Amino acid sequence: MTTYAYPTSRACAPADMEWGRLDNDRADSSPLNGYGTTLSVPGMRWTATLSYNEQRQSDRDELEAFLLKLDGVAHRVSLWDMGQGSRAGLPGGTINTTGVTTSGSTAQFATSIVLTGCGASTTLKGNSKFAIGGQLFVAADDAAANGSGVMTVVNRPMTRAAISGGAAVTLIKPTALFFMPEPLVLPRSRGGVCPAFAVRFVEIFA
Image (cartoon, rainbow, N blue to C red; front, side, top):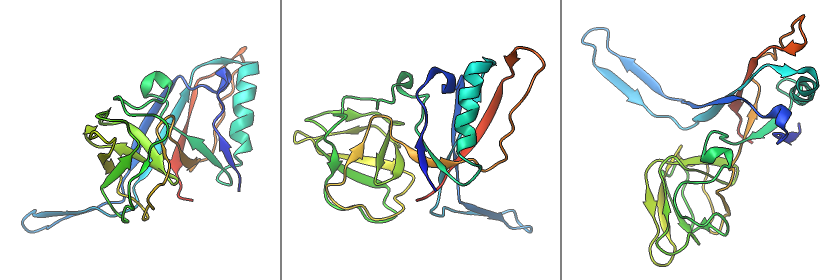
């Protein structure tokens, strides 16, 4: 199994991207009175669908070669949310984008993480993504650092495992590992232009 970074070339740049979450939740309702119960279970995974416009053959060859290199479900691709930060992958707010680490340890299944090195009185806007130790999080609310650059961020999803203090935080193009869960279908045409198509990816835990 090999992990590949998603290419940065023009040929592989998607025209559109759908980003979502695949929840591992439970819901039930009584057949007698309709009373409902819901249960949140750890194990939420990110999903992404990349859509490509019509392309000339040379560009499509490059794109298809990369997708075929993933060899179905055998290999992984490192993806980030290309629809945020004008595709620059930058977080919202004034937080430092380098040198940020966790402040103290974070327990498994935590829904808030304390960061340090954020910069005095800086901010992180809700919906900004960040990665720690191979897990990709989203800030579920706006956050602000104190005068010492320490910031408490409400995170989703919850942490899959405990995080040690001093762990590096990635704020520029934070990624997670994905695989292709469905057969790769590559459209063909009699004309000189290759048809549009889309590929779906689902996060996989390392």
